[in-house]
Amino acid sequence: MKGTGVREGSVEVASPLADVPVGREVREVRLLAKLLDGFANPVRLSVLLLLAREGEASVGKLVEAIGVPQPRVSDHLRCLAWCGYVRARREGPNVFYSIADERVIGVLRLGEGILADNLEHVEACDVTESC
Image 1 (cartoon, rainbow, N blue to C red):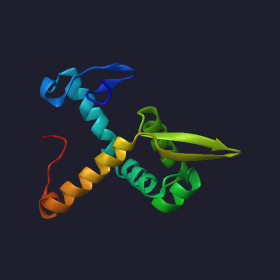
Image 2 (cartoon, rainbow, N blue to C red):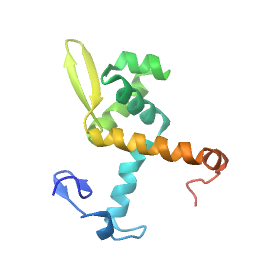
Image 3 (cartoon, rainbow, N blue to C red):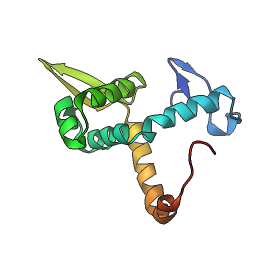
Image 4 (cartoon, helix red, strand yellow):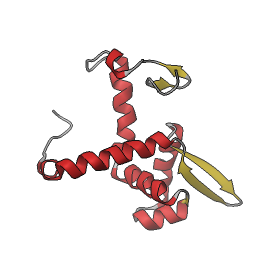
């Protein structure tokens, strides 16, 4: 059933969350970590938040709003498009991006809700990737 598991390409690799095996080296866990990495970069997250709010934006508008160089924004957009978070639409010389999967907006809302409930702890957290 679509939407009940982790997908790699067109292949569903796991069923509902209760069926996902755990462990650092388990394929499903690594894939889920990669999926969540798409949200973990401040530039990518800014792009996703802006697109969720605006519906669609050109690369130029994203560059202006986020305040980072165009090549960097374009690199992140390619990553987000490759992973299925955003889609591109060409109109003449301009490329416009929008959220490709409404579940991305759900993840953003979920993150905002968790952050609102735990703001002080998140601000004080000093966890690094070396944990």
